[in-house]
Image 1: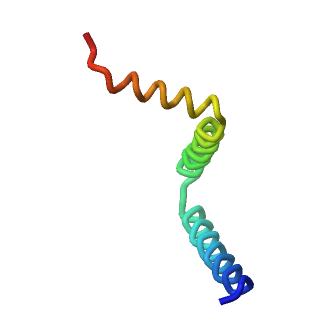
Image 2: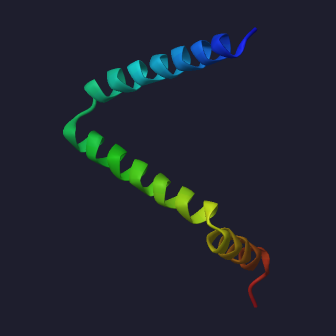
Image 3: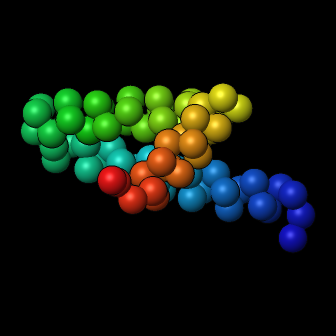
Length: 71
């Protein structure tokens, strides 16, 4: 299998996912579409925080705090 074959299989899978997503969105109500859009924006923000050095360190520190028993 060459690199071209690998890329073709990957892009075909991406095309299939895009078609499925478009089909799902076409069946959504405007309110569902708005909620879905908000969820997407929230996920982007989460990824931006966790991919930054300071953001991931802060998330790790906060996670440790949650594991401690409360007095």
